[in-house]
Amino acid sequence: MSRSVQTIGLIDYGMGNLFSVQTCFKRLGSSLKAVQHPGDLEGCQALILPGVGAFDPAMDRLEATGLIPELLAWNKADRPLLGICLGLQLLFESSEEGQRQGLGLLPGRVKQLPNNQGERIPHMGWGKLQIDRPSPLLPDPSSAEWMYFVHSFAAEPQETRDRAASVAFGSGLATAVVWRNRLGACQFHPEKSAVTGQRLLSRWLEWLQQGAPLMP
Image (cartoon, rainbow, N blue to C red; front, side, top):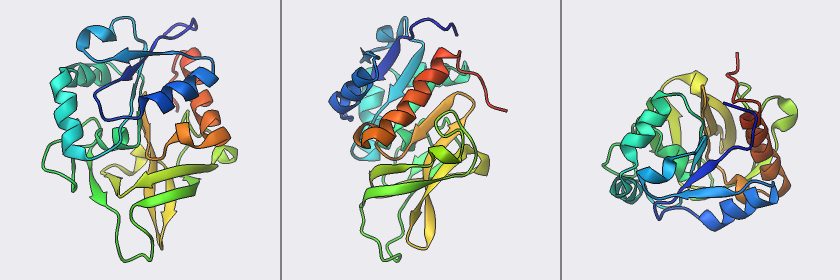
């Protein structure tokens, strides 16, 4: 990837708060290209997969766009993709929330948050990130900031290394960030996390500008 201005596609399949994401990136000086059909991918160097709502309807709508084969090919080519909230969950093989298969870009399953932890479900509010391993989103301990969460389900990666950050939930932890090669996603909403969320997305943009280098 070159260091010139990147064209970033925002996948619009009717299940994401696109305005909030677009507004946040505009603040960071980056406009997003709406992607509703496979032809819209032309010219994109990176993609964002947002998501709000339930797993099965999201997969139904994503399938209706014709973009699923394109996303599988995009990931196979190791091109940058960032998932947000439900967009993280769709990357996995399946979810306890529904019956449909997910995209399967990451091995593992999405499970309901445990209801015996004395925590409110949905898990809603600010949580402090715990870095499990460095990633372009969270490169060092100083980047482990507070982010805004709204979710009732959390991914459980089959491979521990895919989990880049966690958040406390009761006496345990829930997956907050996943990262593998150039595929990353966050369970929280960076676009609703004020300055800390903007910092995280700025790091992703800077990583793209550097050519999306793989981390050791």
